[in-house]
Image (cartoon, one colour):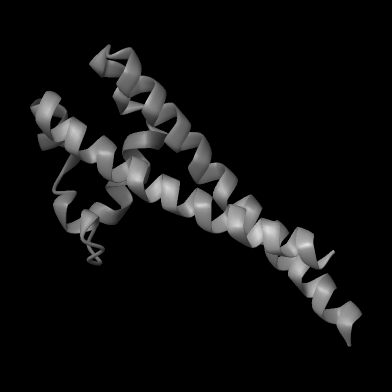
Length: 109
């Protein structure tokens, strides 16, 4: 059970890192290839540097509203779809990881 908890922690960190890297890549692609959408999106540069601003919500809103579908770029749409799914999977993975770690801690005492 300890090995399962360790694997889940690694998976959680890897998923979070992949989502962060993918979101940065998505943002730079959006700015470079789709400047009109970039302007509509707000100022995500402050989000990219992890500052607390209203732009934090714009990343999730952009994905949630599926605004990326208007680009007609299949690679970009696929990336955004994967990121959108990942943002739903991450909280579930976090709760699962914390639950298994709690079970491991309770069994060890």
